[in-house]
Image 1 (cartoon, one colour):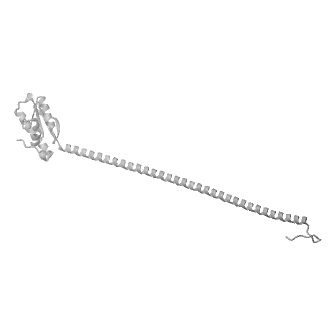
Image 2: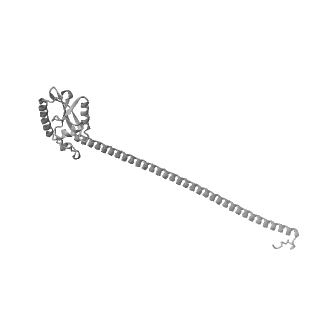
Image 3: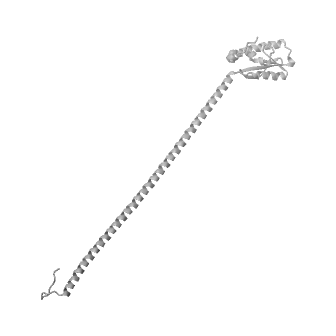
Length: 248
């Protein structure tokens, strides 16, 4: 800076010192101003960085919250899907069990129906095989009808048992020709002669007279007519494998 001179043209030292101080102060003020501006800029930068950091942290928290919400939403959706799948599986399981139960019930009904039909067929077959064996007892010089026997042609044991019971009661059995035979032979005998009739005579009346013979012959003719009229011939009465030998 040029020296300042007085009106006399000579510079005084005091004036020069004042001028130096003023110049120094000005530079100091300038420096202080620059420092303040620098500090302000730095402060602003720090504040800006802090705001940016806070924004980043806020964004990070928001991002974490969104991710957490998304995870929770995904978990809820996954749980809902799993729940729906379990419910679907349970429904399908119940439906399968229901179908299986209905199938078992149908099979049970079908089996019961088959068994019933089988039983009915067997019963019908037994009824078809049954043959009525007439019984007549000699009393008061006549043949009085007794309750007949319904005999299964494949199991005619009831005839033998009935005759044996009468024998215990001292009643003897005859065919319509007034011939006695073994108890187990009567069924085939009366089937073969187409009479289906067994005569019973108390042992006290075993004396065979003409009246008994004539009435037995008449009963025989009527019995044969009845059997033929009913078309109950020997081959029809018994199965092919059980046809008895003809008794002479």
